[in-house]
Image 1 (cartoon, rainbow, N blue to C red):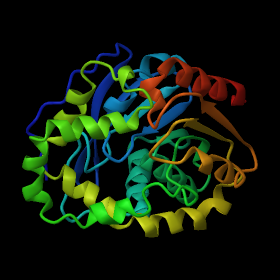
Image 2: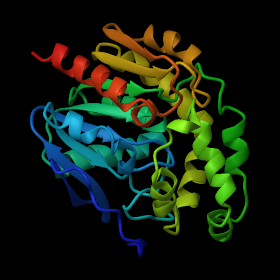
Image 3: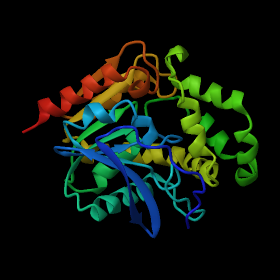
Length: 291
């Protein structure tokens, strides 16, 4: 069922165009462009393809980009009956790859999207060539372990969303928490995220994801041995207050061929806060690993 009465913002990157796919009978929005090996970009829990607005133009010469709005977020359809656990969400991404006839791809995921990237790699049986994980949720970060289940118990998701939309200071606080230096928040950032959040069903989707948070962390720990062989880049902001930078090393040790790019002074969204440094790290990994 389509629940998107609000138009998506125009795509401002000349190399990238808006498209739609059908996954499980729902319309899934994605941005596509660029040239080269295919790269799937997976946003975080309350983000959407808008999150990559400072990266797409730089990455486009090095990869064919598929920046999705996950079902339940952004300008993709919502469903009140959709399973929001990591295995189910990764299954939907796998069916997206099938729909696009993508036999293999590199996968770049951030935060909750990083967990999805790992789950997809375990599920896709050799179709994920390389992983690029930006402060991914993981079993070694204590941040969110207590808060996520508490947020999941907030009652009345459908009735609460209109109220939250009117709480501008709350939205600004949540956005500022993603940055180490709030002065780096670009004009239009808050408005861009709020626009998609206004679509009915968004808050309910986020609550259902959080409801399974602890189980999903156990799931990630279980699947890590199955993806240990995949070449992996971890990217972290040294001042991340959402997913602990201290968890980078224990996560890194679970991969046979992995490297860590710790971006000094950045917070949880280095692709927005220090995009030039982030783009250099990603492009360096992609080009070094080619062949």
